[in-house]
Each structure stands twice: as structure tokens, then as C-alpha cells.
Length: 160
Image 1: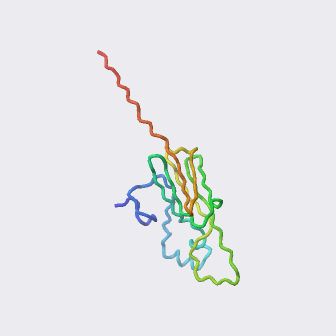
Image 2: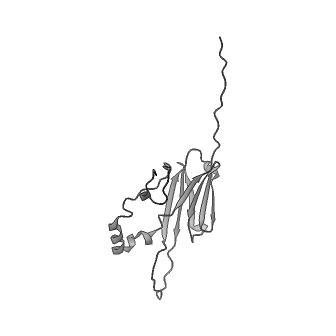
Image 3: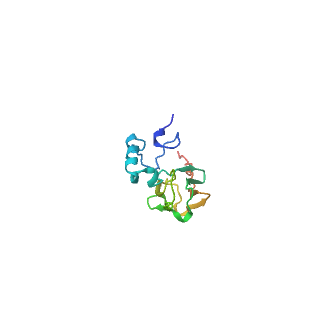
């Protein structure tokens, strides 16, 4: 049984993620929203932004690793920031393709516009050693973890 139901989007997971700052949109799949999109194209999710940029977050023994699919974007169009309150922010913008007046569009499915994803990092994240790499449309952000110090156990002699 999943703790995160499928209506929260993406993959089902056995793990509740208290660090994610994603906001649940209860109207995302609401039937009225589709009719609004047809009446008001400027409100359409498909044409306004790719806010649903998918990000995977895995934890290894050494680091927290985030991978975001950003096809068609250059590294100059993506920004990775760390805020003081331990928040990783990934943002960027995909420009709208220039239209030629002689072009006749049959279908527009690729999204354009701004996106923003934020994740609250755990206490063991080394905030000053974050690294980001962009390769083949996949952004990888690596946040190293501090070593967990094992508590030192000292035996006390009992007198008497």
C-alpha cells in the first residue's frame, strides 16, 4: 500500500517525503479545467509553462542526488540555487518557438514558459559543496551528506 496516493502525481511510493515543498493541486484533473483551457488558452497548462517538470530525488550513503528531465534546455537557461533555510531551488525557462506567419500548426504539445521546483534539504546536507551538471537534457544536482558521527560510548567504573 502506498502512503502517497497516485493522485499526487508521478510514481507511487512507499515513502512519505516530508522534505518536498511540492504543492498538491486538487483541480489539476478537474473536468472544468479542460473546458476553461479551451475558452481561455492563456490559462492552459500545456501552453503556459512546464510546471510539472519531473524530478527524481534519491539518497545514497554519500549524497542526495536530484535528477530533472529538461529536454531542449541549455545550462544557461537553468538556475540552481540554495537558500539559507536549506531549500534547493531549480528554475528556468523554455522560450516559445518563433512563429512564421506562413506556418500552419497542426498540434502543439511541447510546453514553454517558466518552471520552478523547490525541495527542503535535510540537516545532514553539506550546503557549501553542492554540485550541478547538465548532460543530454538531464540536470543532476548532487548534495553531499555529512558523515553521521557515532556516539562515543565511555564505560564508567563503579566504585564501592
